[in-house]
Image 1 (cartoon, one colour):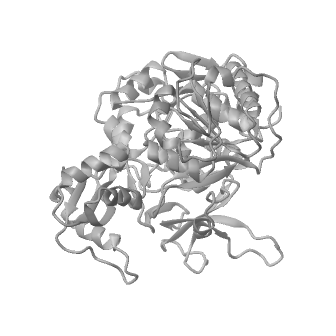
Image 2 (cartoon, helix red, strand yellow; image 1 turned 90 degrees about the horizontal axis):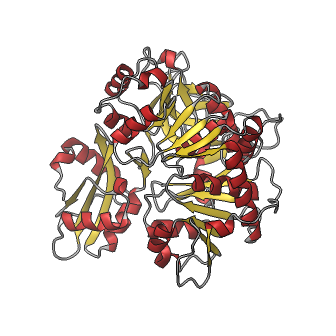
Image 3 (cartoon, rainbow, N blue to C red; image 1 turned 135 degrees about the vertical axis):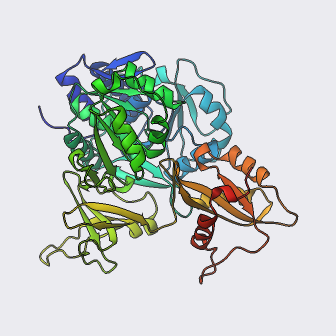
Length: 532
């Protein structure tokens, strides 16, 4: 059988190999590969029937469920581009993304649509909203039609638009250090090559059961689907509420592979683990930040047979490095070496390679390098650059991803993360834009100046701190926290807000100096900052 070239072919090929193999499980429901392939075909036919053109965007705003996966891969089979939305996003954030990438079709639940409807009025490119279930909720839609999931998936036979591996497959939104979230454009080739690469070093097989605890809007979360489908494995979709829910699922579903972010692992090691988990958990993998040694050690005590995989990745290139389990004892603070079918360089500002142990920027080249940021040439030019040092005979340039992260490479070739060059806040495994938080503070009408930044935190990675000056009379931090809670998901709410009596420091360009504030408050610690 031929290898998958397009994203949806991962499922089709697995169904051809083992039609009755279970592809997805969620809350006692199961879908075989044959059933999932059929659902994908029906979604594709339905989208084509709605008039979806090649490359047009379909946003999916759902919790993890079988319909979610069918909508995503059905969009691929139709020749469109899917945009998975984090279910934690608020209506205004969802509407921004829909406008930014000109979404034509939105797939969501009746409950989520009821919350979203008022925010969709300005989404001028939206033509159809598909709600899960058989019935259509009442709505005052003017620009778009509301359709049921059963109506979408009734048509059969319509073929999707022809696409090739370098065509647009997905746009994954990730927060930037300034401004609104930006959409990372990924091709079929990017996603399929990533699936094959990660599955190869994790040694995924049809006998595996992977637990999907991360949002499918994350590259690492979506990777649980693609690597499993490449291998013909089963994925258990979990919308967990508490760490104990994860542990219960690990045991009940006999999970063999778990990928999570450090803050979740920090919570998991505090709970009791049934001894039986060590009988079947084959590996656990870390992404989204450095795993504290104490947490890593505790995990290895709980499941001594499981192999630890420490990984580093960025949405712009899917996945970049991993540390082989046999190296963990020798270098537990390393992010490893390049994954298969990728090369990782450490370069100086002038583009020349760094010497051993010399700090430089991590640069990723290879098949996983994305296609830039949607509708944003300036940001694309900052990260996707011509790779220097190619031989003169190559006429066409090669584009690589310049991560903005500072690393060093030791004499054995292993990489170590040093820090982020931009001011992105990394908290609970999420990348958070300080500007987005500041905008909410400004919108209260009570703030004259605002700066949000991250400071080191033992369990969160970074805790979000905001410093503001009041406009007119003083403002209570509790009121500002309440405003953030109303408009932002939980992981973006500041742990502390301080109202300063003095103007905030500025850099030579006249901009508020977040970096100076971060250094000042890092010395104080979060506990020293007044909060709600």
